[in-house]
Image 1 (tube, rainbow, N blue to C red):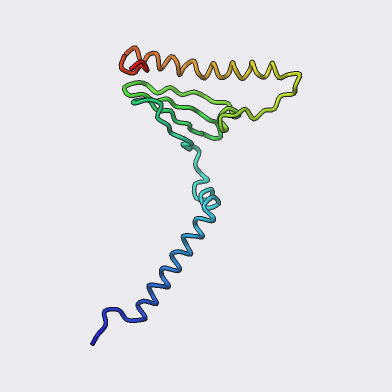
Image 2: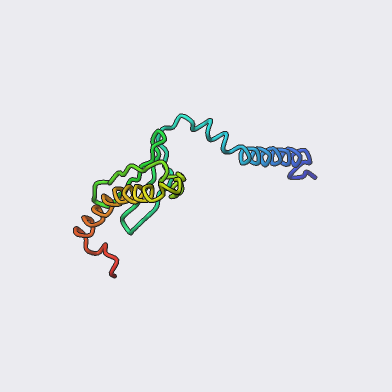
Length: 138
C-alpha cells in the first residue's frame, strides 16, 4: 500500500513552517529599523486621518518635518493649515516657560490656536450655509 504523505514530506513542511514563523518574529522585532531604512527617502507622510463629520475629514500630514492639517469636505476645496511643531506633537505644548513668563506664553499659544481654528471655522460655516443638513441640531 502506498501512503498519501511520506515522512520526509512532513519534515519538509515542518521545517518550512518553523523558518516562516522565525522570519515573522524577526520582522516584527525589527519592524521600526526596517521601516526607516526602506521608507527613509519619503518626504511626505500621512500621520493620521480622522472623520469629523459625515462628509468632512481632517488629515495630519508631515512634509519635510513640517506639520500640516488638511481639512477636506465633499464638493469643497480642501483647507490646509500649518501647525507649529509643539502643537503637532500629541496635541501638547512641549515648551516649558519660566514662571515669570508664563502669562506671555499662555497668550501666545492662545493666539496661535485661534489663527489655526479660524480658517477651519470659516470652512465649516461655508459648508453649513451650502448644506443646512450638516448642522448639529438634528
